[in-house]
Structures are given as structure tokens and as C-alpha cells.
Image 1: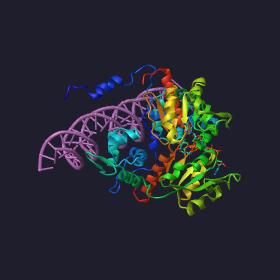
Image 2: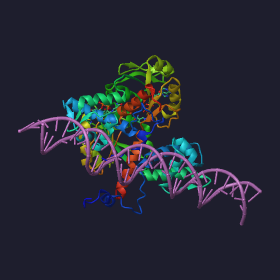
Image 3: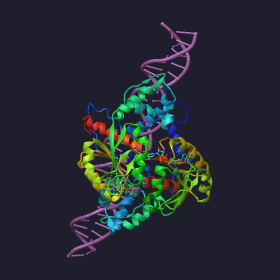
Image 4: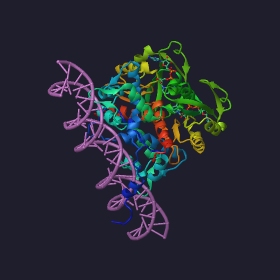
Length: 233
Length: 233
DNA sequence: GTGCCTTTGTGAAGGCATGCACAAAGTCGG
DNA sequence: CCGACTTTGTGCATGCCTTCACAAAGGCAC
Ligand SMILES: NC(=O)c1ccc[n+]([C@@H]2O[C@H](COP(=O)([O-])OP(=O)(O)OC[C@H]3O[C@@H](n4cnc5c(N)ncnc54)[C@H](O)[C@@H]3O)[C@@H](O)[C@H]2O)c1
Ligand SMILES: NC(=O)c1ccc[n+]([C@@H]2O[C@H](COP(=O)([O-])OP(=O)(O)OC[C@H]3O[C@@H](n4cnc5c(N)ncnc54)[C@H](O)[C@@H]3O)[C@@H](O)[C@H]2O)c1
């Protein structure tokens, strides 16, 4: 597997100012912690009590030195000669990622993609709870999906404030995304996951992460073409 | 000092061999080209003939020096004092990304997500054509989605070879992903887009890109927690 | 043709991430 | 309690990416 991490994965809007309280975990590390967590959960399910950096790194698909350096940013949680206690490390990473608390998520735009996301089980698994589904289309409003009733987009601000939504997923068409984005920020949300193929413009302090299928395919196409051209790689 | 071969000297040998045809575009640049392309298409729709690096960078949400350096890897396509010709640049980037040719894509796993992907219009827009939908569930096989009939996963190898599929999207449950992955690679595919939350293990020469909603949410949660903790960012 | 103005393309510097290699730390059998 | 063995945590070197800053290039008005 080409282990290329593309920098877009680390791009966010806010800047970090070094501070005493700031253990300053690098973005690249933060992006990998969920991966380690997933591998650890797999080990925990199989009842493995401890794991070495070598084994855990293999399970997560990274270099073991990188794994150790990543974990060293959280603290010194390993035992030399033994490895890491699986349960303890799960707890520490979860805490660092903020997964020991419950996050209320709202999905705006309940079309093909929004429905798939709402029905996605892996969502709830780690402290994320879908607290609202909103759509602008009266035809869609009232539909029941995954135990929730779709509400009208007009209720956006109300839903966010009443239910303490802190993360919003935008799955509307591109044309509506910026408008929805502006509204949720106005309502106090500072974390957005955007599926619409547009660059959202947001003020400082707001984090936007994007998922763009089309971009991923284009990157694959680039490399595929390279291989076909017989360029030495 | 040992007389062992120094790692760097070794790396020099296996390193990309400079070639006339090898313009060696950095990965970070490749990842941004689709972004520029999208911004350019927006400009083209509005009939804009030329654009400066400053304006295009703003539209794509990047630093203008970065944009210029990125574009300089493709060649010298700008005109000083004027900017870039929109149509010409669209063509050059498309060519570089391999979008001037048609790519046949197969989607394996036609559940919630697979259906959403199949129905997604933005897919076809840029040279990507869905050439097959496959699922292991007999209940799903035969369904018609977006003009295609879902075929049985047993047909995987046949479909890939007959229809010249070169990119496979995996949207099966995590438990089936590695197995599907192994099969498509065996059938000759070297580009995979994986939505299942597992680290796929693949031989050299195969590109895997992954989209993982859960990871994105966890990264957002990390930063959200930081903000709540009152850490200056 | 000349001179001014705009904008590109890139050299250079700094920052960040990666991965090697190893001393230090801890385990465990006896 | 010891000595062999395992594995962590990290210093360090290297290379990639980003950003600044500016000389060179080209357009345009006259
Ligand atoms: N379907 C996919 O696989 C896929 C993949 C990648 C990206 N995307 C992107 O995700 C977005 C959603 O895709 P989709 O296939 O679900 O589209 P869709 O058209 O099926 O659904 C969009 C939904 O958003 C609702 N909507 C429109 N304007 C709204 C507004 N202002 N407020 C609230 N809701 C509004 C519509 O009523 C509709 O229900 C699109 O931007 C698409 O480009 C989709
Ligand atoms: N739905 C989402 O929003 C979402 C988001 C992120 C990730 N994912 C991941 O994407 C994958 C698909 O999610 P989903 O919600 O569509 O699940 P799903 O259960 O609705 O669909 C999975 C489909 O794969 C088929 N399948 C199972 N084994 C197969 C095999 N060996 N060969 C071919 N087909 C097989 C099943 O029959 C089913 O139709 C899962 O791994 C999920 O974790 C989903």
C-alpha cells in the first residue's frame, strides 16, 4: 500500500500557539490516533492483554517508530520489555480524542448520502450520537430514518441550540453548502464535516474537514495513468 | 563507522530515476490539482477567460505561492502580468490527472453507502464511469440502480476483466473488505478506494485510498475538546 | 520603442514529519 | 539478586512541504 498521507488531511483553519498547557500533539499524530484506537479495539475483542509497538504498528499499517513517537506525545504509557496495556491505551487515546464524552451530531441534507450516513452504525459506536436530521425539501421532512424524524431546515438553529449539537455534517448539494455552513456557524457550531464538493469559507476558530469522493478518484486516476505510462516509480 | 552500505546511498539507487517523461509531481500537489480543477470549472462556467494565481488560490482556498509552485510542476502555463488561461489550464490539469480518458469503476457492496455512491452524479462528471455494481447478497442482486443491474459478487473477476475496470470502490462491511480487496487485486486492479473501516493490506504497486467518516469525526472531536478546554489555538 | 505596471516562476529558509538506531528501562527465569 | 533479553522512548539526520520575497517576464498605453 502506498502510505501516502496527503496534507489535506491535516489542513484546518486554526493555528496553534505553543503554551504550557498545550501538549501540542502534531496534527499528523492526531490523524493516526483513531487508527490505533481501531486496531486496539480489535485486539481487545480478542482478549489480548498487551501489545508491542511492533505488532500494533503492523495492525494499524504504520512504521513502529512512528507509532511509538505518536504515543509518546500522549505520555509514557508503555512498559519496556513488555509493550502497552491494551485496555489502558484504549482509555488514554479515547480520552485524548475526546471520545469519553458524548458528541451530538446533526446531519443537514437527507438525500442519498445523508440517509446512508444516518443509517450508518459505526457512527454511534464511538461517542457520536445523531441528534438531528434536517432537510429543506418538504417532501423529505417527516420521514423517519434510523429512529429519527427528518425536520425542516428552518429548524436548524433551534435544533442546534436545544440539543447541544457541536458537530454538523453537511450533505446538501454544493449550491446550498456555504449557506448552511454560515447558518450553523452563526448558531455556534465550530466543527463541520463537509461532503459537498465546495471549499467552505469559514472564520478563524472553525474547523472544517471535508470528504470528497471525486478528489479521491482523481488522485487514483493520476497514479493509475502513471503506471500505465510505464514511468519508473 | 561500519562498512555496511549507508541507507542513503541505497536509497539513491532505488530512487525515482530521473527521466525526460518524469515530471515528478509531489503527492501534495497531486492532491490539490482536483481542487484547482473544480475552481477553474466554476470560473469557466461564468465565462472568465483568465485568472491570476491570487484569485484562483482564493477560490481553491490555498496560498497563492503554493498554487503557483504546484502549477509550475506541470509546466509554464501562465503569462506574466496576466495570469492563466482558464480553458487551457483546465485542459492541462485534466490531462495530468488522466481525466482525458475514461475510467471504468466498479462498486462492490451495494448497501446504504454503495447505493448513494451509485446514484451520485458527480461521479460520472469527470471521466469516471460506473461499469459494475456487485453484491454478495442474493436479495440485492438484480436490483436496478442508476441504470445498472446489481450483479453477484461471484462475477467480480469476470466483470473486471470484461469491462476493463481499473478502479474498484469497496463499500462492503469491514469483515468482507480484505477478501474483496485480495480478489480484485488478483484480477489485476491496482487502484482501490476503500470505505470500510479496516486497514487493507496490499502488495507494492497497488494504491489504496481510504475514506473514513469515523476518523474524520474523531479528529473534529479532538479539536472541539481542545476549544472547550480553553486551550488557545 | 519606452517605461510602467502586473503577475509569474522560483531560490531560499524554516518548519514539520519520518524513520533509523540505540541507550535506558523494565521483565523474567533461575 | 543477577544477567540475558525485550521493548520503549527519543536524539538525530534527512527530506518534503510551505511560505516569503523578488527578479524576470510580459502586457499595455502612449
Ligand atoms: N451520494 C454520494 O455518494 C456523494 C458522494 C460524494 C459527495 N456527495 C455530495 O454530497 C452531497 C449530497 O449528495 P446526495 O447524493 O445525497 O444528494 P441528494 O440530492 O440526494 O440530497 C441532497 C439533499 O439536500 C437537501 N437540501 C437541499 N438544499 C438544502 C438546504 N438548503 N438545507 C437543507 N437541506 C437541503 C435536498 O432536499 C436533498 O434531500 C452533494 O453535495 C454531493 O455532491 C455525494
Ligand atoms: N453508510 C455510511 O455512511 C458509511 C460511512 C462510512 C463508512 N461506511 C462503511 O462502508 C461500508 C458499507 O456501509 P453500508 O452502510 O453501505 O453497509 P450495508 O450493510 O448497508 O451494505 C454492505 C453491503 O455489502 C454487501 N456485501 C457483504 N459482503 C460482501 C461481499 N463479500 N462481497 C460483496 N458484497 C458484500 C452486503 O450484502 C451489503 O449489501 C461499511 O464497511 C461501513 O462501515 C459506511
